[in-house]
Length: 405
Image 1: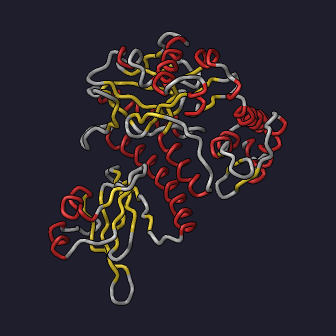
Image 2: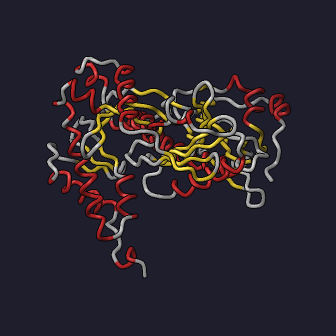
Image 3: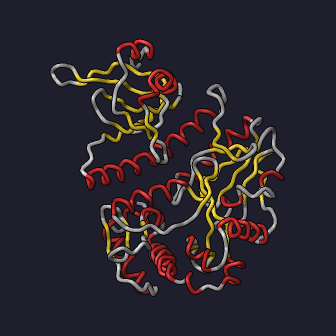
């Protein structure tokens, strides 16, 4: 019998209580409130030092029973350290700043969550990288990594660009390039210092690796940067499989692949490519999670504002025979909706008895080409489009939706 069955981990609510006690023991200065709906700890009132517990709880559950307490104490120390950055001098900052790559959804989710909770979010500057990632400036504490706000940069007399440049140079100073060759043209980072993924945008690192074609990289966790070439099918398949394994472990990062051209951009090879199906699956799984997080926050915000808008689901399906992944969004007549950007749109309406009639499915590009004037792009990531109307009979005939197979 597995140890996890003999010694089951605490429930989510009990884990939150353990975290609160550990944070207090670690010296956190504020009393804390547990928000079970958002699964986070926060100071009462308008405090912005919110600790979301998902990653900590995932790591706690994955740990062996005798290691769980260490997970709790480590995250508690990290949270307790959030108050300490304000006492840091500019000289100390210059030596300890780092450029950090994170998933873009983290910042976008916090924006929505703070609108729901009515709190003032910390103004953390960042730059978007490859559509799905961001680069921010952090202060590297002995036991934690702390995001740096715009106000803190101003106190140190730095602009964001200056701090970002310093952070990048400090990463380069942390040690020479460290990559293990998994096979010819496929490389795995070996720093293992919480900043492997953050070295992705450094021009001195990835471009120095010899690959076939353009450089393609994935960052499935903060300690994994894996690189191969766009003209190396076997390397791309191996990279995707390695990333898939990492993404199933605690604290996963990004399921997207990125290609380096003039800048890093999201990458997916054509459908006939041997790596397409798996890379599409990993990106669709990531987007499904992002869209679900976003939908939860949007629904809570709409309930708070008493706004009647249907937040459509991002529905990704994998064909068991072909392995092809297709993402769909549902657009219904007479329903004010927010559509996620998907591969295809399912068009529907109600019959006289009130039942739902599926008119068929059509590729997103075709629907947008015919009825794009009905799409209102929203200031959201991942992207959504508000549709208040519906295609006319003539437009539907041009769209020619097909039955689902």
